[in-house]
Length: 450
Image (tube, rainbow, N blue to C red):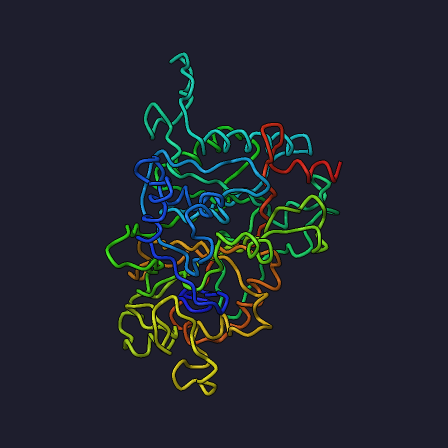
């Protein structure tokens, strides 16, 4: 999928404000305020992840309406683990991403509680890094060793989310299910593979490198024997795009060759994130869910061979954007808002263009905006000789029905469907964060159902 409001992913959303984040400008601003990335040992992602730092750098006034491509890779980059919200939602997108879905095998509430505590402890350690203890060589090694003798944080974030199937009678959670959490139903263009759908619990694991994500996954599996069973997994990546002279922050390209991530709500705008992404006490959700969010996941196959034989003009009309620049067909640059008002008949931007359907940019559709964190994937070759490539689409919203589901229904029947086929995914609820070292992920849920 392409942009929602003006990008190229399934859904490109944004406010109507024309906002841009100059990557080099950000670096200059950070340096001028003592946040010099090199001098302070920080990378752009760290500064962006800390609102106070961004304020100091004078960049919160301009929101980044694109899902920026990763700027750099710093093995010592560590995102804070404790807080009201989990990592991996508004965290700057890393170069590697993985979605792993599990069946929960714990036999009772005590087992589930122990699982949530173990997950919290392992994620807290892995995301901050450190050395692992040595052990008598007559026993299995304490770590897989694939990162060497010391574990660097490497920009790792691990986000824990629960599927609707966990809220059944097994653990007594059935009365506490988030009100919009449901089992994902197929849309008209879907060809869902049951083996790649749903799950009791999902982990979104993202890092600078895929090795770090693999290490985290193996560590978690090793520490949860008898409690978790992998149901399906999909990994992906985003190309690293370091800043260059005169560059304006742009989104990375998907495997259809279009920029994917344009017109994303700015994750640096806390007020906007509170409005669109995070659950608060005013939404009629269970009290334990405050601080959480809904995560929609879709594995979207791209028919790249067919796409590569399609005329460029047709490709651009399907998306509603110029392929190379990412600019809307109405003109400007990637970050500019498409002009639909002077094009009511769709003579410039077709009425069924992906970006126009995904985000019509009307006051009524502002509430449908979602925060996207997509990754490209390549799974090898299909039996018919075609490349199995596509998009691991991940998005977050405070209201699943008003967010992803509504946007996807608007896209039903779009011309892009000839070139894409959703084959897997699911809906999950992101648990609120663990606030301190005495807290653990899911504590509120377990207490509410005790």
